[in-house]
Amino acid sequence: MFGGRSSEHAVSCLGAGNVLAALDRDRYEVVPVGIARDGRWILAPDDPGQLAIAGGELPSVEAMSAPGTEIAARLDPATRGLVVTAPGDPPRSLGEVDVVLPLLHGAYGEDGTLQGLLEMAGARYAGAGVFASAAGMDKEYMKLLFAARGLPVGRYVVVRDRDWRPPGPDSATAVTPERKRVLDDIAELGWPVFVKPARGGSSIGTTRVPDPAGLEEAIEVAREHDPKVLVEAAVPGIEIECAVLEGVAGGPPDASVPAQVLVGGDSEFYDFQAKYLEADTAMAIPPPIPADAIAEVRRLACAAFDALSCEGLARVDFFYTPDGKIVLNEINTMPGMTSASAFPMMWEATGLPLRELMDRIIQTALGKRPGLR
Image: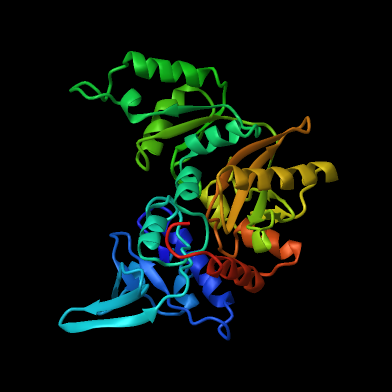
């Protein structure tokens, strides 16, 4: 499954194309299901080429849709099936689905909503369950859980809708006591700060704010994607990422060789442009940090995975400061799978190329019980 209703629709499509090309067709019968931005489910063509950037245009499910390809999930745990519906034709079953690979990012796909639907349908699926998906999507509660486990997190302020824009005819410009408190709390973080949707990803809606003058505009940009906003203190140093897989046969999670993000182009930080569209963005694998720091990054990545009760796979992001401290930034419970994404690159460098990586993820999911985990 790919696409989805969130602002990360195109990233999901790109990742799905990469995975479709890698899956072992001698082992798996693949049914590509795209979710359009309006929520329709579509039986998509099994063609990775349609899920690539073409002529500067990002791919979408809408561009692949055709009459008679809409799909309905049959919410019957006894059948675990998908049905194709077309106007004027009787419904046509695609048969029982053994496992769902939900390569969706952001709201309505990575936040526990789809995972709950799949559990209602009695379908096995790859990746985190309902709780871990929801906690991993909401950066406020993610950080609260990390802190409760004693993991090192940076300073941040949450901007809630009720505090920023309370009801009333003058709410757009009124500086209420609540709004002033939020602005004062943010000022205590120091400058610059990073303003982002609390439940977003791929750096969409994220702004680096160097001084107070641009703060309110940056909050409004983030609020276009989520009424709840997170403002984070900048952490000096380099960005480090680490990929995690659920352990084999109930064992502890496995962490990949980490990577340093090398931001390309003219981007001030690792934003959407740098992540997916800049040819000179790269990963240094392993990162240029001491061996004991690499070992600690891997340990903390597994600890973050366990703190949220993650399953299947995740990517954990850190900062490594000039004085050798490691700060945990966030976890991504369904990391990007594009050819430019760090998750498959890190596992490739660890000795697990994409085809074998997907085998492990799928086989782990097949070992789960259907329904409530």
